[in-house]
Length: 114
Image 1 (cartoon, rainbow, N blue to C red):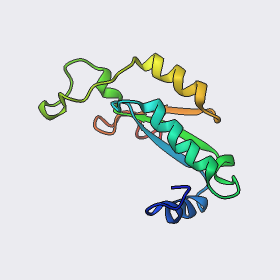
Image 2: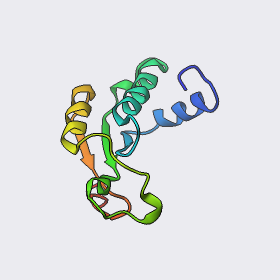
Image 3: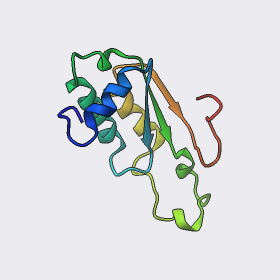
């Protein structure tokens, strides 16, 4: 995105008009921390660094995936690759901001807080 590939610059110009950057992190991703880091690297590389100085909130979604037997049949392939505590520790180690939230859009958990 920072190199202007695809809709990269158009999207990042749009983000510059925002007051807060919200990162939605998929708890069932193969590498949720790597996904988060990649987005922040793109933000750092873009423009004059204004985006990197904006307030950011990381929101981990699909927290219901840690609950055994709660998923629908079509969700059986979704699984978390680390504990919630391990994910929190790794995200906090890489975050340059302090707000970390947890939610399950499917179950409605944490949605009101967001």
